[in-house]
Image 1 (cartoon, one colour):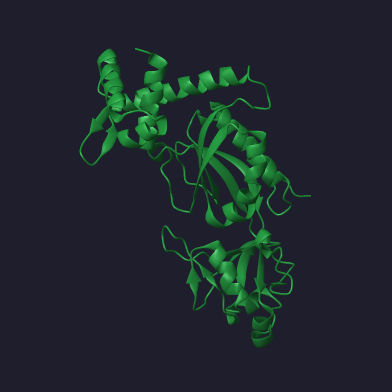
Image 2 (tube, helix red, strand yellow):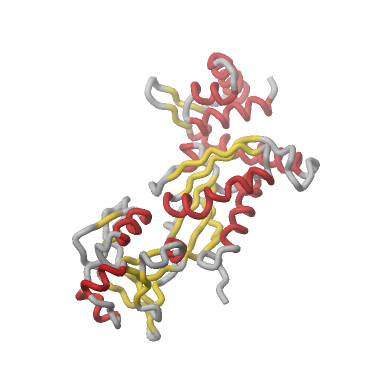
Length: 304
């Protein structure tokens, strides 16, 4: 039995969460994967996978063996990458990425061709959305996320800091007036942004000399998507808090209000499993993505 190929097969089945999908990605018959797993479990003297007609899950031994296999295969790739040259022209394989909708569309996707030119052997599978993904269970190598993160077993590499502003369409400001202070926000309509996971409306956190002030936004329209927030603001439905990158290209269509007020910025992090950065494909993508954010004045970590 080729132990490395058996490990690769096992890891692919776990990441795909399906024998059929794993077989398709490996371009092998499903029966071949079944036989490999039977031989591997017989060799180890342990059951790694629990199979039912509807579900595939790891046993406790399977979880331990998956972590060890992933680390071993990543170490092999790293060792090979050291001999393939720093330009990565011969680096091969797929990288599965999950991006948040608005940020992914506006900042990352427009520059993906740059990454492909630098690393042509790396295939990218890109998911777009803001849902809470299970990286290990869904076979995702990394996920880009905005905001403070809950404690988890995942590694979080902070690569950016999203700056915000308050803005509104000119016709709204003509109708309702321009707020001159934070106290005047209470008399205005706001576009309410709520969490798609919890349904809770987000307060605006605004930095003042003596600390952070929270403002509960009130309005007749609520959304849970940053792009939708922008679309509604352009229609004059109220004041909105936008990421500064969203305000770019909106000259004449949106006006910044209370320019002396600084909404609290939010961290942008790349999440990946423990030991995942040993994967040279992930390391290449993480470093490239950090460079994309560092080059953007509205998203970079350090601000002058």
